[in-house]
Image 1 (tube, one colour):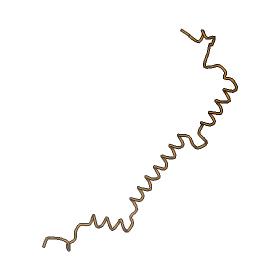
Image 2 (cartoon, rainbow, N blue to C red):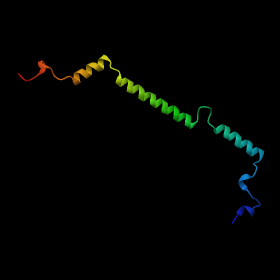
Image 3 (tube, rainbow, N blue to C red):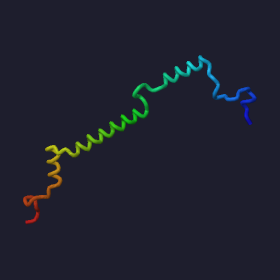
Image 4 (cartoon, helix red, strand yellow):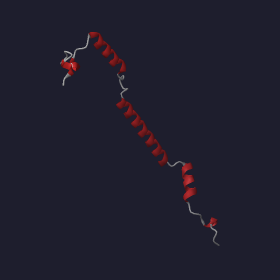
Amino acid sequence: MDDTRDCGVEKPFTIQSSPETQALKEQQARALAPKSGQSKILRKAREKMLEESKRKVRSRARDVDTPINQGQRRRHTDKPGPETSTHR
């Protein structure tokens, strides 16, 4: 059953809007549209790139052997020498 024929409208979604309504719609679309570089896709891409760069920096910081880090490694990984041995 087609109720639109009772109203005298054959295709309600293809009716031309009035010039005032069309101008209002266009104005709202311009106001709500993201500006250049503000789209969700670009924002997500920037966030992902930032996270990857932070991850790389953290990874490189762990790989760098500074004198302080080398000293800490020696202290923790060296086996006790004969002078610290309890066997006599």
